[in-house]
Structure formats: structure tokens, C-alpha cells
Image (tube, rainbow, N blue to C red):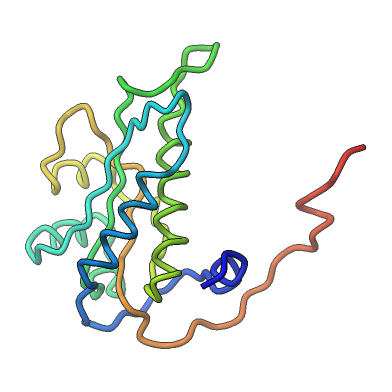
Length: 168
């Protein structure tokens, strides 16, 4: 797909086929995630694609939506504060770096014909525990991953001039 076609086709999917995600598609998605820019190129994140049924079931408990659990894979991106760049005020931008990588994941998944849905409304400590994460990592976002079970509906956006402005 062309870049602007991918952006236009991108949707949050909440219904999945049980078909597995091909390893080759996951490799290409992983390369897209790896290419995401981060502050000072520190790359303070790691993404896991969870296909293991027991671990997916454990993650489904931290975000209890039926459609989340039906996807054949769940992506988890976690940040590592100790590796992240810090603002002048001292706080890290680990969540920004992880979010940029997550957006690369989502655009690449869309280009592969896969569906996903950005999830942040979950219990982070329980997600970390369900995955057995190193204590330095903390989940930032989750996403089911799989082939959409149907076509997503139309959606609306605010007018461009409310969201984007060129200042001369």
C-alpha cells in the first residue's frame, strides 16, 4: 500500500478472525517498530507479540473485552525509564518514544492487511506481571493483532483547520 492509503485505511478494529498472523508479516512489522525514531536514539522500549494462549488469556484479564481476547495475537509495548532521555525538568519521555514505536507498529500492521486497536485503559502492574516483565519495564500500550472479521464502519474527523495550521 502507498503511505497515504495506509493512513486512510487505518482503523481501530474490534472483531478478529482466528487466522494466525504470518511470521513474515511479523518480521516486517518488527522492522517498522525498530525504525521508529526516539529521543537521542535511545530506543527505551521493547515490543512483544504474544501468541501463547495462556499469556494472551492472562492479558485478557487486564483488559476484559471479549473482542480483545479473540485476536490471535496481542502486542505489548513497554518502556524502560532508565534508558529514556530526560527533559530539562527531569521527567522522561519514555511514553512518547513507546507511542511513536506503537504508531509504526499500527501503520505497518495496516499495510499488512491486519487489524489492531490501541489500548491504554488497562491495569499496568497486572499486565507487567502477566508477561513476567523485567521490573525495569512497564507496559505502555496493548493492542490485539489479527485479520479483521469485517469491514470497519465510517468515522469522522474534525475539520483540518481545527487540528492543523501553518503559521507564516
